[in-house]
Length: 357
Image (cartoon, rainbow, N blue to C red; front, side, top):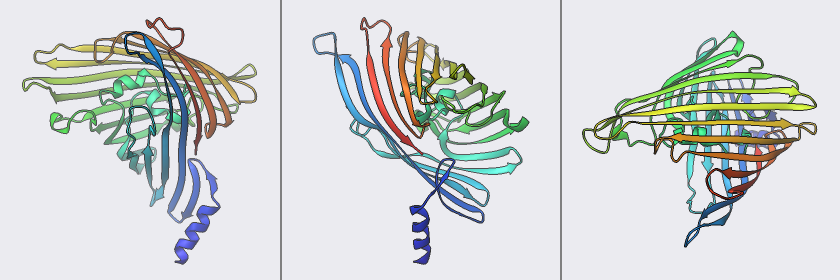
C-alpha cells in the first residue's frame, strides 16, 4: 500500500521531462507519462449527387494518445496507445497500439531497437504528426505508406551515430503490415542515413525555437522481394528510394524554416501485370515571427506516375499559419487546400488545436 501511495504522490506533482512528465526515477529505472489531443474542424469538397461538388463539414478528435516511456537497466522502452479519428465521418475509431518498442545499448553510439515503431524512411513520416508544418502530413509519405513501406511497422534494426551525432544511420528488417502475411516470404529491408551539419537536437520537427541552426540531409532506401501476387504465378518486388532536407535558421527578425523531399517507388512484377513507377515530392517553408509565436507557411505536394503508386498526377498546395502558445506542446493550426485540376478556388480547410507532452 505504501508503495502505491508513494507512486500516486509522485504522479500528482510531476517534474517536467523531455518527453512528458517524469513520475518515477530510482537507481536504473525511470518512468515518464505524456499525452496528445488534436481537436479538429475540417471542411472538404466531395462529389455531389447529380454531379459537381459540395462541402462536407467534419468535427473530430483527429488523434488521442497516451504515452509511457523510460529506462530499465539501461534499456529504453516506449509504449503509446491511440484512439484516432473519433467522430470522423465514415470512420469507426478503435483503440490500438501506436508504438511499443525496446532499445538495447550495444556499445557507445550503437543500439538495437525491437518492436513497433516508424520505419526509418521519409523525413515527413519520421517527423511527428504533432510537429508538422501543415495541419497533417502530405502525399510524400502517405503514398508510400499505402504500400506498407513507411507506416508503423514491427521489426528490428541497428542504429548508431558518428561525429557526435552529426552522422546517424539505421538499417533493419521489418514486417509489411499492408500485405497479408501469407503473401510475403522476405521482410522489408530499410536503411537511412542522416547528416546534420549544425545542431543535432530535435532534427525531426518543422519549427525550432531559440538561436540554434539546423542544416540536415537524409537519404533512405527500401527493398522487399518475393511478394506473392493475386495470381499464383505473380510475384512482386517493391523498391523505393528517397532524399530529403531541412533548414531552420535565424533570419532577420524571425526564423526561416525550409523543407523538401522526393520519394521514388517502383513495383517490378513477374507475371502478366506490368511494372509500375511513381514519384512523390514536396516543398514547404515557414517564417516564425512575433517572438516565436506565429508561423505563416506554405507547402506544395506533387504526385506523378503510374496508378496505383502515383495515382492521378496532381498538385496540392496548402497555405496557413501556426500559432504557438508553448512551442509544439500547445498550439493552434489552420490551413487551406488548393488542388490542381478541380476548377475550384478552394478545395478544403482545417483548423486544429493541439496539446502534446
